[in-house]
Structures are given as C-alpha cells and as structure tokens.
Amino acid sequence: MIIEVNEFKRTYTTYKGWVSRKKETVTAVNGISFAVEKGTIFGLLGQNGAGKTTTIKTLITLLAPTSGTCKVLGYDTFRQAKQIRPRINFIFGGELGVYRRLSARDNLAYFSNLYHVPPSVAKARIEDALDLVGLTDKADILCETFSKGMLQRLQIARGLVNDPEILFCDEPTVGLDPLGARMLRDVLKVLRGRGKTIMLTTHYMPEADELCDTIALIDGGVIVAMDTPSMLKNDGESLDDAYVRLVGKKEG
Amino acid sequence: MLRRFSHQAWLNFKGANAAFSFEEFTLLRLLYPLVTLTFYVLLAAYSFNAENLTHWVVGNSFLLCVNVSLFTLGQGFDSERIDGRLRSIIVAPENKLVAVLQKAAFPMLVSVITVFAGFIVSSLIFSVPFYEINLWLFMVVVIVSMFAASGLGLLLAALSLMTDSMHLILNTMNYVLMIFCGANFPIAQMPAWAGVLSQALPLTRGIEAANMLFTQNNPAAFAGLIFGEFVIGAIFFLLAFLAIKYAERTAIRRASLELF
Ligand SMILES: Nc1ncnc2c1ncn2[C@@H]1O[C@H](COP(=O)(O)OP(=O)(O)OP(=O)(O)O)[C@@H](O)[C@H]1O
Ligand SMILES: [Mg+2]
Image (cartoon, rainbow over all chains, first blue to last red; front, side, top):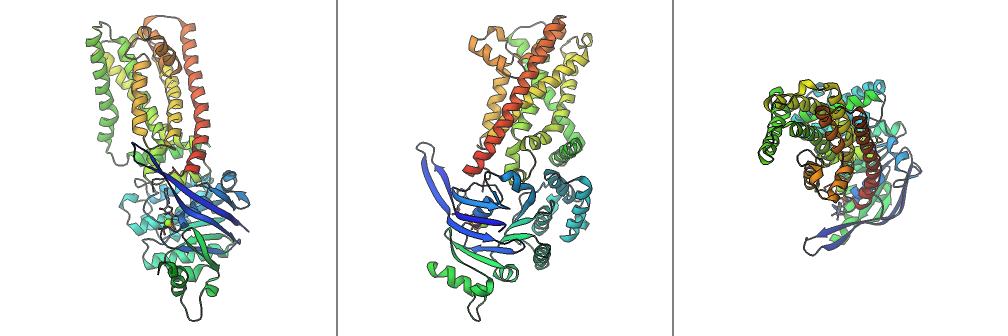
C-alpha cells in the first residue's frame, strides 16, 4: 500500500483574547484509518470542516499528526518527510500560491528549481504541462492578469513539475470552466494509466463517481463509509443520493 | 547548483520588482536610502557638535545596506506565507535556508551598490576624504559585514515560521543594531553590558574596521576585525541553519505555517 493511515488524529489549538488567554482545542480528524493502493484514485468526500484538507496537509508533510501514524511510500510523514517530498506533489484549489508578478512559464521554472529538476528535463516538462492545461498562448503574460480558472490551470501544471508518484488534489476543479474540469479529469486518468497514485477531495459528486476507484466518506473527523463508488450506491441511486443517505442522516 | 541558485534569485527579484518602472526602482533604492543617510548624519552633526563627520557617514552607510540584508532575509518566509506559497516551499525538497537566501541575493547586491553610491555622495556633501582610502578594502569590509548581518537576518527568518509579528521583531532588531553597533553612539561611552552585547552583534567590528581606514594604518588590527566579523557571521549562519530546521518542525506540529 502506497499510503497507509492508521488511527490518525489531529487537533488544532488556538488562543483567544490577550488579557486572559483562553486555550481552545478543535479536533479536526478523530482517529481515521485507511490505505491507498498504488495506481488508483482515492476520493475523500465530506462536509465542510469534515477534516479532508487536514488529512491531505498531513500526508504532504505540512502538518504533523497529533496521534496515530501516516505513511506515504513507506515513510513516516513527519519523521521521514525528506524521503517523501521529492516524490509527491499537490494541487490545491484557490488563487493563492503562485507568483502573481511572474509569467506562467517563470512560475513553473521557479517551482521546478525548488524540486531540483535538471534544467534540460524541466524545460521540456514545462512546455508539456503548459500545453496540457491549455496555457501555452498565455505562458509569458504576468499571472496577475489571469482569471481564476487560468490560475487554477497553472496550479495544476505546478503540481506536475516533478513528475510525482503521488498527486494530492484538494478541490482541484474549483473555478474551472466545464472544459477545464474535464481537462483535469482527463489528466488524472492519464496519470493513473501511467501507474501514478492520486488522492482527491471534491464536493462535486459526479466527478468523484467518474474518477475514484475507492471513496472514503468522512464526517466530523471520522470515516462513516468506505468502498468503491458502485458499492456505496444502492440500486438506482446516484452518488449524490448515497452521500445524502450516508452523511445527511445525522444532520437531517 | 550555482546556476540554479542564480536562476532562482533572478526569478525572485523579477517577481518582486516587476511592478516598478526603472525610475521608481532607482528612486526607491537610491534616493530614499540617501535621504535616510543624510538625516542620521545631520542628526549626529548637531547633537555631538562634531567637526569631522567621517565616523557617522561610514557607520550609517553601513547600516543602510545591512538593513536590506536584515529585512529581506527576515521577511523571507513571511511574505511567502501571506501569498500562500509557503506550503509549496516547505513541502519541496529545497533547503529552506537556501530558499530564503535566493530571495535576498539580488536585493543584497543592489544594496552594495546603494551603499557605495550613498557613501560617495554623502562624502561629497559632508566633505569626507573618501579619495584618500583604499576603496577596495572598504568594499571588502562592506561585503564581510553584510555576510554577518545576513546570518542574523536568517536567524530571524526562522522565527517567522512560528510567529506573525515579524514587523515588530525586525524593527526592534533594526534599532538594536542602530544603537549598539557603534554607528551613531560611541560604544566606549556605553555601560558594560551594552559593550558585551555590541561585541556579539554583527557590524560592530565592520564599522570599526571601516573607520580604521580613515584614522590609522594598522593592518594587523584591521585584519583581526575583519576576521572577527566573519566569525560572527559564520556563527549566526550556523545558528540560523539549526533554528530554521527546528522552526520548520515546530510549525508543522503547531500548524502555524498557514494563515488559513
Ligand atoms: N489552522 C487551523 N487552526 C484551527 N482550526 C483549524 C485549522 N485548520 C482547520 N481547522 C478546523 O479543523 C476542522 C477541519 O478542517 P478542514 O480544513 O480539514 O476541513 P475540510 O474537510 O477540508 O473542509 P472544506 O470542505 O470546507 O474544505 C474545521 O473545524 C476547521 O475549523
Ligand atoms: Mg478543505
């Protein structure tokens, strides 16, 4: 198993007020376990605040588990981050995260350098990525003039600069037009075809249904169901219906 | 590796300055520092009733370029955090200390030019005999002092992974340097503890060495000061290296890497 999560728990501690500091602890993920097989797409679905981003951040070595273990490529995400980092990458939704005063091409060059990709390899890979996300025409324009969807396309290209073995995608289709969203789905399928592993969160059920080999439904920091999309659905149900049945029963 | 470093440094610089026109850039980087310099030298001239302003011109032109090392390095992670790129940098294999240095490389280069221009222009205004000294040696002093100040800047950058009060910290440090490194106030007149502090700070020896170029010819003492400044810098670099490693791990534990 290329990703192994065991009894993973994460709390956040925040402080309020500055005369008398009050400590507040929020449990974002409350003991989840799952494993992802190499060469598959694993979907993590759930309500806002369910703990999806927290889980992904932990797996990409940006956050330490409060308890339990997370292993990626056989290495512990906190203690052995160094071994994991060159071999994975991520695509997050949202407009932050690129240099707005650099062109798309310069941005990708910058991130390639962060991953120590040799210049000759990087050059060809950047052109491929730009072509893949449909930004070749705009590659030399400053990103501050980009639309939301164009920035998101750039984020996708950024996630590919080191040809990662595992790609973590947190709401990667946010802001994309229908063609852009389909492009992303095609990219993810091609990557899976090449043996790459993908972990995906999305609030768009048809997308999860189309892409995922396995889906975990997470609610209030715990996994409430985990199976293939077809097993999650009852006869004649869409994934949307199944989601409402499995997650909605508590919130009514 | 060097190629990658300079490429990254250039991309950083381009990204930071693309918004400015050449005129704006020159005004910001040359005229503003020059006015600041003039202000402090005039202040010294009137408050100490000094005839010979060499000491203040030298000290303050030093402070100027050191400010750049301190601020651009110290804010290195902070600006990335605000723009949501910190996670990409943390999660990438690149050494974090190197990533911050790449950001500061060009600003520091520019500030060496600034300090030289500032030094010569203010020397002309305040009639400092800069043509009598070996400008190459002066350059060496500037570069070694900037190296030492960079070490301090990097050490502060480590803090920025754990706190969001960097403006306060950097400005305080700036005044600490201004007061204790001997640029504006004679160290000899300070209490003993301040003397000890000033010896532990970067810049103190650099400024003393630069002043020596004007006042006396003592190659051995000069070399000693330069070496001392270099050692201070090396110590700060080592501390910064360890502190950044520690701060990264602490930030990953406490979830203080991102604002949202
Ligand atoms: N840095 C933080 N400090 C404090 N609390 C946090 C922090 N990040 C997340 N949380 C809290 O942890 C919980 C889980 O958040 P998380 O971002 O993992 O949810 P999510 O499943 O990604 O939600 P969404 O679908 O809205 O993206 C939420 O209650 C959130 O308020
Ligand atoms: Mg989220």
